[in-house]
Amino acid sequence: HHKRWHGHINAHARSVLLAPAEHGKSRQCIYTLLWLLGKHPEWRVMLLGDTFTQASKWSRMAREHVEQNARLRMVFPHLVPGSPWTDAAWTVGGRQYGQGEASCVAVGVLGPVLGARVELLIADDLCNQENTANPSGRTKLVEWFETTALSRVMAEGKVVIVQTSWHPDDLAHVFERR
Image (cartoon, rainbow, N blue to C red):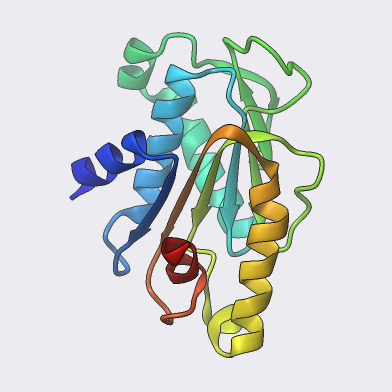
């Protein structure tokens, strides 16, 4: 199923992938991020998590691949650590523009995204018990995502939402219907 996920993401500007826990959704987000950044080193990526801590964890794993994965380096030799190089924001070599902007930034739900511009937005498990337990929490998350997070994506950019289904009106289901 992972190959089908990647095929879908590569073929579409907007993707929603729903799967139960422990199906490798977050790891596939990392691999998608690295593949697309390898193909487009000038791209800027926003990795959204339900919390900044969670987004930073996945950002750190992606950075570790850039630092240590010999097979990644064979395919994309230009993916080398740049500056900044933190869990919150990191840059790879091979950038053609926006040298002052990080290649990848990690942000939590409702976090500071204004001013950022990205070609790839990955929303990994933004829904949780707190923001999906009632209609007002679901509405708040959907409105923030649509008015704030999506406003950061460039016209030619990609949006990938991966999550476990929490409710028929959670973010992924709403986005999927639109």
